[in-house]
Length: 172
Ligand SMILES: O=P(O)(O)OC[C@H]1O[C@H](OP(=O)(O)OP(=O)(O)O)[C@H](O)[C@@H]1O
Ligand SMILES: Nc1nc2[nH]cnc2c(=O)[nH]1
Image (cartoon, rainbow, N blue to C red; front, top):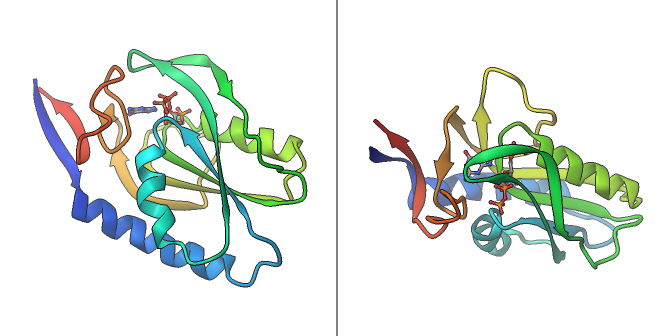
């Protein structure tokens, strides 16, 4: 099996730059700093690259929720860490690495709404273009990829390869 690079670092950085410009415009002039919630672990690298491109006052916290083991989706989302920052009444910006079936992002967004978030905005590095639509669409999408398991730039391949400097797929 070979490994093929879908997006290298300059392509990812340029795409994150484009969504940052849009987010900066949309969040300009808010009355209170929004809460950026990073969905661990996959969004760690995306958040690290995105945050310095944002030019408005914001607070950062994280949620750790997972539903993929050994590259396969489980039906249940497992919550490993809930955010500690206050959510009620705030604008929340969810940052995740990948939107696949959309179950993770939909459940985390619902969690925030149930905690009383004033608004929930979603941003993903990569939207996987599957035949079935995801449960939720992201408000900001940096890149699109065809269906197939991707890894690198925070995304794991059986828990490895999150450190790869690009987004990759296995090809026969
Ligand atoms: O749209 P979905 O089909 O729900 O999949 C997307 C989720 O899957 C990955 O997380 P994973 O559960 O693999 O945990 P990880 O972030 O620790 O890798 C990814 O980081 C997203 O959060
Ligand atoms: N690493 C990784 N995690 C995912 N979570 C949902 N889809 C994927 C994928 O293609 N790769």
